[in-house]
Amino acid sequence: MGVFGKRAILGLVVCLALLTWCQGGALDAQEARPEPVLRAVSLGPNITETIFALGQGHCLVGVSDFDNFPPEARALPRVGGYVNPNFERLLALRPDLVLLHGKHEKVDTFCKDKGIRVAHVAMESLSSVFSAISQLGEVFQCPQRAARLSAAIGKDLEALRKKVSSYPRPKVFVCLWRSSGGLFGLGTAGKGSYVEEILEAAGGEGIFKDLSIPYPEASKESLIKRKPEVILELRPGEELSDEQKRALISDWQVLRTVPAVQSGRIHILTDDFLLVPGPRMGLAVKAIAQALHLEMDGDGS
Image (cartoon, rainbow, N blue to C red; front, side, top):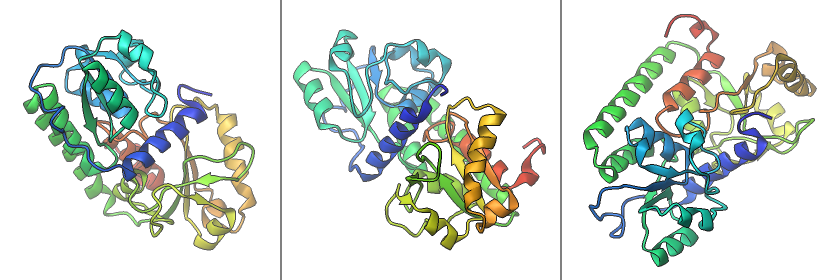
């Protein structure tokens, strides 16, 4: 198991799902205080990445258990995750600001009792990432850097959308998790999910985009019925050998009538940024686009 492993994949998807259902994300009265941030703790990998991308990594004194990028984040103290924050460790770091996804009653109550400011940051969709970058630019008093970062990300995404627009849009099944050793408990992406958004930006059409549940489970029977032309299995951060990838791909051979299996269009993607809405989401779109449109490989784009 690699840097993340199954626990981290599930954790990231759970966080994405929680964010999709959360309300809010804007600064409230407690968060709007103008004091400069000197010691911050981030409880989200994408929040941490964004803070570093804004050149404010020096303000971070602690991060969540899932924070592995940029490399400098790996050396920072860990304070648990969104689901299981370690309040003892957090308090020991003496932060003046805690940043977390959406709303979190336990963290909010703890920080209020201890006199620690809280910033709720929503980064569960493409559009909300840009809003969050602007928000963090205000929090860390670097709005111009935030504007430049958003512009650069937007430019990359627009270029990718334009490029894939000339290719056919294949029907795609995205596998986010499954039971080991077989095709059971297949987790996928539905309507309103970040994964469905980046798939669409990459020039693909999710076979479950009609489902209102952002991250549903799928059955083998449903795949046979919906006939995906491409299967993408996302295993972010896992260090898989060629033999391990071949074994994973062989599991799909039981679905012999599915077009993706018949044509061999099954891809195992392990890039660590695939499920992290944030500054590197353009890389996620590009990685998926290159799997869907093999013509893109090696063209220098």
